[in-house]
Image (cartoon, rainbow, N blue to C red; front, side, top):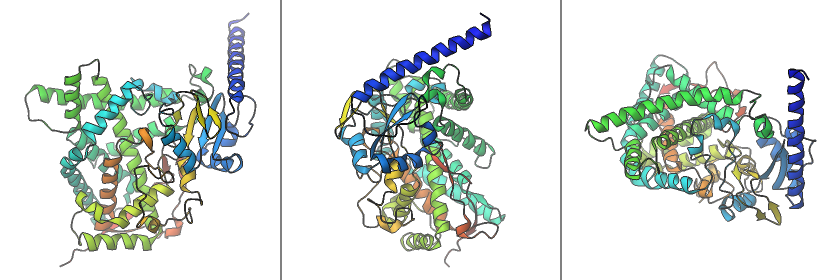
Length: 503
């Protein structure tokens, strides 16, 4: 037999073996009474039906098959929760059983990906990292202690917009917010600007982090047909590795600089990195290593910059589309803060309408429409159905946030719906879970809310914004592009005018 023919024959046998194994597995799971769902095609399952906008197609399917539904993505059996009640079953009532994470094949390109808090199973290592975040990094005391750095970042952002306004420039909101957020995070974590705000590196890093988020969330044949993983047929893993490697090199340089500083006896910075290095010294390398620090910083940089930038771009887009709402938000700031004065974190609680604008943005444009996937760590009974061990589970936060059962005029931007409401960001109301809920809720929630509030307040308090090229509000393109996060497809560009200060 010729080598080429032998290779084809071997591949054919491999495919047949995998199909038979997964057919056996599917029949076994079928006996366990999975939730209902569409039948799908042989081998492909429901892949063609779901397509490249799964949050939308799954929402349509749920109207036929119910709020707890089974879909087959190639060889993967996936259960989807599409109602607040089913989200509560997954994220609260049975959260211990669903602590696991299925790891996308693209993510495995990251060196030491098995140390990532985002993708670790709910084991001892994960609990240890969460404890560090909850007790050492994102505490109210530590966030309060570092708020001066965030205020400096906001002042720097305002100055950059003022300079752009004087030059008559249109501002890319996403690029502006990304640079500010990146420097704010780098100051909070390691006490210095990671890049010059005016440098082209901002756009390069924005593209690098978005590339990671986009590729990690891109439909990948290797995830649907595991026997293809060694071949990486779409080249996703090979491509994403370049971005991961660049980011790790940058963070290694930051850690090296800090270690040299500590060895020289220089004053402590008292930032996140000092906390992590202290923990490393106390615990020893077996419990907590330098690699843990690098991966944790990677998680925080990627998660913090991309989601904040995406949310802010959508918030400014909605305000520009709705001038009356923009005017209400600006008036609240004038009455509470005063014209021309800087906003501080202590002012946030006195700005309920601004908070309502943020909540409504996250409701209508959740950054993670399907949240991050969960995985059953054991067989779980949910509403009379059995979800077998190792089954992937999605919570369709996008569908829940647009369900008329929970929301009046759900597709309209109406911040007033949150005024006087007890619904908040903490994931206790399952019709509104932008940061997730339960034990897997976003660990950086408290910092994210502070950052988003300061960013939005600063942008609309100090400037009047208009659209370029005589665009009208209704001309703004509202298309999005799906990844792990859901970004605006066409970046928002707007022209600022400095608000005149009172005499």
